[in-house]
Length: 291
Image (tube, rainbow, N blue to C red):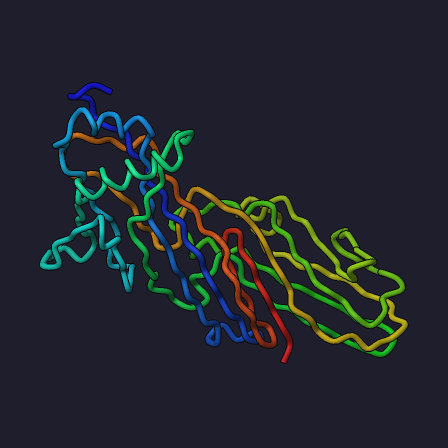
């Protein structure tokens, strides 16, 4: 990188959504979405800064800022003008001396690294209940002394994403107690772990292009020797990239830098629910428990 070259910077938005469903009443769905924005710098930038100790200030604008709440900029690295009038976007600029000191320290700690990630923003997203969850769920248990019937209904929700992207590697994992002796009527096919007494459904992806537009059900009947079963937490995992739940984006202001990549994804967190409570996200962990 020459002294006059624009310096490559990458940005990544990662968001985690926790959604709690109670029964089939969508008005009782409680949603919390948190996120972070990270900037990534190539390792060679430290040499560039060493040769150019007064670089241009790195300034960027976050788009759709009005969707965010409780925004926490990195106090050592970011500054902003709180008097800006545009509610839909907000400008931030980087404290370059502090950034150069930070990157130099990281390069000494990780001499083999090819890039350095720097946390810039943490935030919460203004959520609109069940409309903000990428996968809506409902679970029904029918527990009898000799058998347990389990039904999981799911629905892909395009409204939760600014760009509709597939939920990949979707897994539904449910522990079943009561001494399972036989599985019957398992649809679609699932894997039963007899040692851990858990059933696992794997769906490669769920999207608008899926059968029925991403609406489906998982069914299973378990024969028991020590029933009845007790309804247990449902754990759901998936990955998804290419979109966020906030709709936030980023653009550079001024010269001296260019974005080599802007990555968007939503990711999983943990939660425990009651009756049909769920938690949703990329690597989404979702727990549902009957009252």
